[in-house]
Amino acid sequence: MIRPLLMCFVLCVVSGSSKPTEKKSRVHEEEPLSHLEHDDDKNHDYDHEAFLGEDQAKAFDQLTPEESQRRLGIIVDKMDSNTDGFVSEEELKDWIKKAQKKAQTKHIYDNVEHQWKDFDLNHDDVISWEEYKNVTYGSYLEDSQADSAYNYSHMMSRDERRFRVADRNGDLSADKQEFAAFLHPEEHEHMKDIVVQETMEDIDKNGDGFIDLKEYIGDMHTLEEGEEEPEWMESERQQFSEFRDKNKDGKMDREETLDWILPSDYDHIVAEAKHLLHESDANKDQKLTKSEILNKHDLFVGSQITDFGQALHDEF
Image (tube, rainbow, N blue to C red):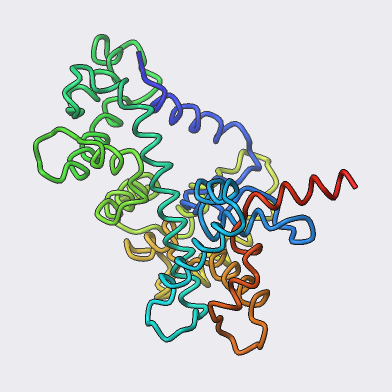
């Protein structure tokens, strides 16, 4: 039986072709800093998750106000990387980036743990390529004619190539770290080349090693006969010429493709750092002292007083 990971891919292909005016995107968008509403008039829950990560924010919510402030003070000392007694916007950005990376890493390894037992058939704490192949492509291997609608042979070859890149010690078995890189290559530096290679193989229809404008647009959507062109297509053409094709040669090379699908900008992190700085910077000198942060501790972290205070407010 084809496993859920593969079937998810198949379903994405099917659904992607079933909505003629919907734009398909290959960009690996970063997870939002928080899925909560960002409304400071209601609460600072969004800021807590952005600053600490979701799990740590929940942990702080269980602390007393005194303990919450004490731990925030320790964090402030860590944020001040140049030990000048101030926290700059850049240091705030670095801290938020690290907190979010830690939260994302936990999410990835939770996913690995969830799938691990399905593939580690002999329970030896590694997943061999043979185990992964047999679980994922078992029905195809038993009868290669049964599922002729999809080219499972090609998909299996791509999976094996990615597996070998993730398998850093070359033993054709993946420990949990290697398996995480295989499942989530976009999150691992040494896997970025394979992400770009897979993307270019899918889009580069003429095989010249580049992605031209026609291929770029065609990957997002193919117009049916008589179908009116969606408005977003013109916008994407402008995106391609102004931002994707950086050297203005009419096509994207590997480096430009990497910048497209794995953007390195952190606009949402920058916005949150600016927000925290603006709200806490009492003397408006564009940097924060420890006192300024602790005076606005409820913006950065939560504590039990939030719910307790709200309960008193509701009661009286």
